Amino acid sequence: MFIDEAKIFVGAGDGGRGCVSFRREKYIPKGGPDGGDGGKGGDVVLVADRNLATLLDFRYKRRYTAGRGEHGRGSDQTGRAAEDCVIRVPVGTVVRAAESGELLEDFVCDQQRGIIAHGGRGGRGNARFKSSTNQAPRHAQPGEPGEARWLTLELKLLADVGLIGLPNAGKSTLLSRLSAARPKVAAYPFTTLVPQLGIVRLRDEQSCVVADIPGLIEGAHEGKGLGHQFLRHIERTRVLLHLVDMATADDQPPITHFEMVNQELSAYAPELSEKPQLVVATKMDIPSAKQAWEAFQLAMKTRGLRVLAISAVTGEGIGTLLDELQKALAS
Image 1 (cartoon, rainbow, N blue to C red):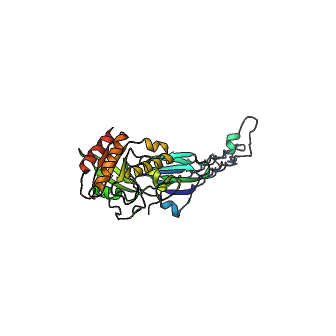
Image 2 (cartoon, one colour; image 1 turned 135 degrees about the vertical axis):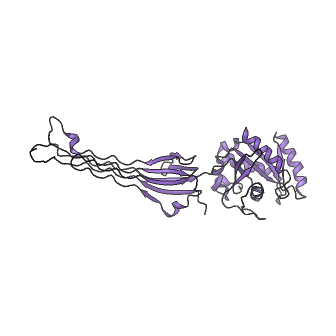
């Protein structure tokens, strides 16, 4: 199950309290204070792990706490510091404070570590308070409390290329043609319910990661359809592959579909509209697509944009698409 959002509670450990103790040995009647300090509480540490691909684990466990530091002891013995609570998250996870929305950590590489909640310091023992005017202090400090907070986790897939377009535009078919990924392909909208990743081999033994994002519809940025749940996954991509169906069954021309998707991107995050786009006309193997292709190509030319024509079923134009994709990634 693909889960890309979670809310968890983390609590760092409290520090141990300092000790009040006096040295008492034979023939040393005035040994003085020897109370040790308390140990530090454990931190809550998040670590990025490339072997994880979902936040599913956080659906079943939502509370994570570290241990408390040991209390100080006599003979100037400092309490042992508690072990950290280590939580592994997928690479691409964004961590925010639940209440304020403040960005706390953005995990973009494997084994990246971040302390999300700091453990409390241990209290000082009475040996620390000895002075020329206070030879026998009878007080020690309590340990400081550890930090505790609710966090929201968001997973943003790390991919080089993002496939975007309306539902049933041919994204899943193209991904299955270019890579070993096998997303669901069917003749009805919203066959892709979660993002799919595939490794695509380019020229000269190069490769890239392509993400198939579930289809957008008008009003996706407001929560309509499935697109609003997964728009975050294309924020990290370097190039957008915008697929436009030339054999659409509705009455709207393909250029209208192209503009609508771009408007949704801009409404969700303006920087998405500034990403490099390769516009691809799909389903060119269907006879009715030829007429729509001519009008779409002319409309794109007036906007100063180049468009490629492909058929993921027959393989038409796939070689040219890979060449243009490699050029876009290299620039």
